[in-house]
Amino acid sequence: MATPKTADLAAQLRALAPMRRRRAVPSADAAALLAQLLGTTRAVEIEDRPGGITFRFALDGDERLTCRLHHASPAPLTAAEAAVAELLCDGRTLAQIARLREVSVNTIKSQVRQVFRKLEVDSRVALVRRLAP
Image (cartoon, rainbow, N blue to C red; front, side, top):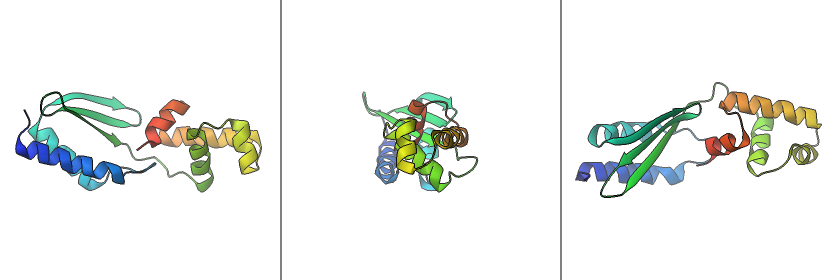
C-alpha cells in the first residue's frame, strides 16, 4: 500500500503529464519527483530502451503508475525534419509527404533517416512512441 507521501508524489507526477507535448523532454521537476518516488515505493519494472527509460510502479492495490524519461536528442531536429516527423506520425506516406512539402521523395527519405538517427528510433511505430505524450 502506498504511503501518503508516495500518493502525493504520484499525484504531482500525474499533474505534470498533461503539460508534456510531442518532442518534450521531462522537466527537472518531473525527474526530481520520479527520484523521490523511486525512494518511497517499489518499481515493478524498469526498462531501458533506446529512446529512454520506462519505470512502472505499484501503488495502492492494483493501481500502477508508468513514467518514461526520454533521452535528450543528440541534436535537435531542424524545422524540416520536425515537419516530416509530424507527418510520419500522422500516418502519411513518403510520397504524400513529398507532395505536401513540395520536395522530392529522396529528400524526404534523407530527412526520415536523419529524424530516426537523431531520435534513436528504427521504425515509424518507435517514432510515434518516442514523440507521443
